Image: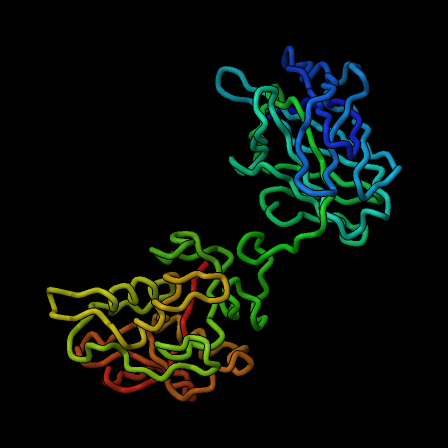
Amino acid sequence: MAYLEHNETADYFDDPVDLVNLPRKKNLSSVLAFLLLIIGGTYFVQTTLAANIALNGSAAVEFGQGVAMTTACSGANVLTVTPNSVFVNASGGGDHYLKNITVSGIPAGCNGADFNISVYDSTTSNAIAMFNSNSKVAVVYSNAGTFEVGHGGSGSTVSSGSGTFTVTFGAPVALASNVARITIQSTSHVPATCIDDGVCVVGLIGGGPGGGTIFYYDAAGFSAPGTSCNLNCHYLEWNQTAGTVTNQNMGVDGFLRWSSDISHFAGVTATAIGTGYANTQKMLTNNGATGYTADTSGAAYGSSRYGGTDGSVGQWFLPSYSELLLMANSSYRTAGGLTGNYYWSSSEDGGNQSRGIGVDWGGKSSISWDKNANFYIRYVRAF
């Protein structure tokens, strides 16, 4: 990969009417030519803090040159925005892509704000993707003057300096020749989230995306077929309290039978991490080969009705034996309120159709017990 840097210059103001046009690259050694001032055309304002772009007249600019601008948070202080391109080799040629954008001259008045940066082509009013195949906004947060990747910015990195930052795209997808306009807006800060931005804290009560507690993390990832993360999961979260079938948020763990069918094999002998969801789906489905009838009132049915604090109904499940054992051995168990004696897993005893597998919380060991018995339950989600 060879790197060729080219930039362009434009002035930005908080007037909601001006556009920046970055002309097409004429060849691989000269990426962009001119910025054109379009007068009288209304652009767009996403928030009252939007900063729109007016050019330095019709002066010629290129990638690598600074663009003078102001935003609502910067007041009279003029910022400099510098887009840079990178040449990516390819079979039979290659092309220039928008690689990073540097913003400098940022005053302390922007502390606590998010900067939202987008780019546009010359023919549409829709932002074009810059990274991650379809990410159209690069968000940078000024955390008391230290600049960080903002909400939704996964796939980009930020290097921070005094009054300046550079946001770099790990997998750039915007052709430099297609970049005709750039906008930057200062907006109120939107906190990063666990499931969207990966800022997940294991053991934080209520810190999971569904309001539960993350009790397991695997950096390499694991498979949980059928879940939202499918073959690339990294976390397991238990819900705060499983409640009952009719009241999922009553503040205590449910106390239910393994299933409404207590005398047939559901076909859920899998016990490994990542198999709880598939087990639960089988418990909720008739099995003609064994005569098993789908659960309508037991532990699996309860999990199918739970949606957490984010409306994720259908993603919660009864944990497999190995997943439940992780919970039993978790140092966050007591703080998380898992204080019952016996909890059901979604694994069943392959040698006895009338028995399911639970975990003895005291001995932290498996027990095979009649499916008709009421055990405590907690639901789990993978993401």
